[in-house]
Image (cartoon, rainbow, N blue to C red; front, side, top):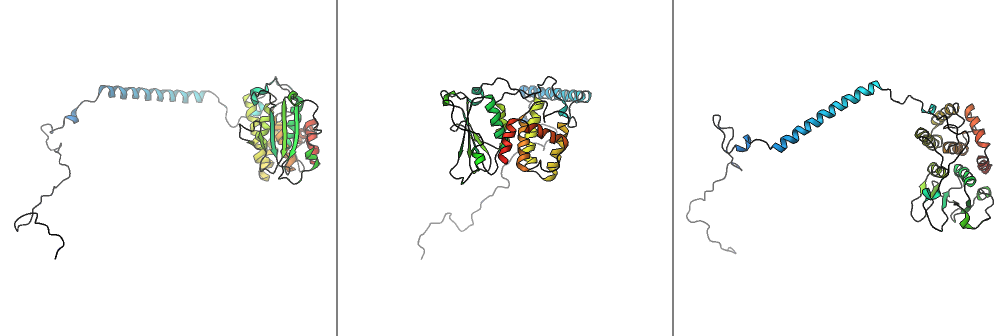
Amino acid sequence: MPMYQVKPYHEGSGSLRVELPTCMYPYPNVHGRTGSPAPDSGHVQEESDPSLQALESRQDDILKRLYELKAAVDGLSKMIQTPDADVDVTNIIQADEPTAFSTSALDLNSVLGKDYGALKDIVINANPASPPLSLLVLHRLLCDRYRVLSTVHTHSAVKSVPENLLRCFGDQTKKQPRHEYQLGFTLIWKNVPKTQMKFSVQTMCPIEGEGNIARFLFSLFGQKQNAVNLTLIDSWVDIAIFQLKEGSSKEKAAVFRSMNSALGKSPWLVGNELTVADVVLWSVLQQTGGCSGTVPANVQKWMRACENLAPFNTALRLLQ
């Protein structure tokens, strides 16, 4: 017996007939009539908006002008001789460059920011297993330029540090009150994978890498260089870090050839002045022992010139 009884939906014994549609959306055929316009075809023959026509015309004019400008530039490029990769930019040196390491007056507040009543302190974390000689050279040069308060500390995680590294800044006894110094230089021997630097511990992220830190420290001397020399200096610093220090034997041989060629044209790597490129390359050569093998004549002469300067000689004694 069924649970629910439902009355029949339709009466009678005949079957219910349902008409199903043959298409989803009926629409008159616009192509059916050839002699007269199709019904509801007014939107086909409707003229376009005048503002749209003006926009299309303007676009065509702009494209035409662009093609004309491109053709003019292509023609000028064939008439004017432009620098290319084959030009040796090391020959482009200003004749009025000084022959000695010179610096111009530089306001430390413009570089390090103004902090009333506080000493601007540069803090560097370095691994004693690989001492950054370039930073020690630059520290000595900074001491000749500014009144620098130098201190050396050892992180608690470091078990032992050679005595010569603990005394890399010499005697650390304060001879003046702290507020009379222009710059603080704090070196912390710490187990870090890369050398790190901060000069505003609370507001900046660390600068990593000996080459990047050397660039920053050398900027404190206010040395003026043209755009070509600045590009060459940055290139030499990158070559020192990525090819001479971390590259293969073939890459190192190529670096020596490039150095020998550049030093055959000028006493220093970039022009007639000592730059950060000389400091970093000399440091990497000493760290990797690259100067112990066969070294080209111009490179040997350049290394002797570096080591005749007191900052380089002082840093070199740390390796002995």
